[in-house]
Amino acid sequence: MVKKLPKPFKSWQLKAILNAPHREDGGLEYRDWLIMQTLAKTGLRASELGHLQVKDIDFQAELITVRE
Image 1 (cartoon, rainbow, N blue to C red):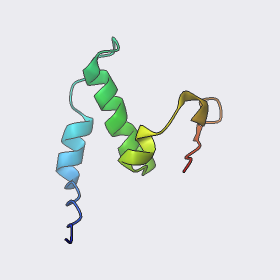
Image 2 (spheres, rainbow, N blue to C red):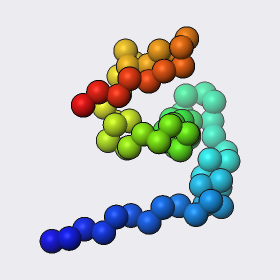
Image 3 (tube, rainbow, N blue to C red):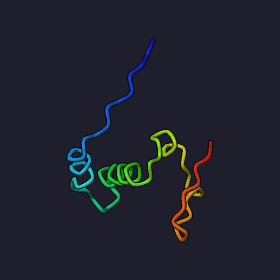
Image 4 (cartoon, rainbow, N blue to C red):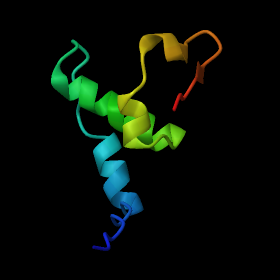
């Protein structure tokens, strides 16, 4: 069975998602906003982001280590 790749977001759709209101009190909306920002700005795949651990992020150097 051949699976089709998902269609990419149109630029206006991505802007709408990234500019959606978010909570800064640690709520789920803020988490989801951070996930979308990270995916959009780093080019990480969702599976790569899902496997990240805090130790993979160097906040001072602004680097993310992606492991297999």
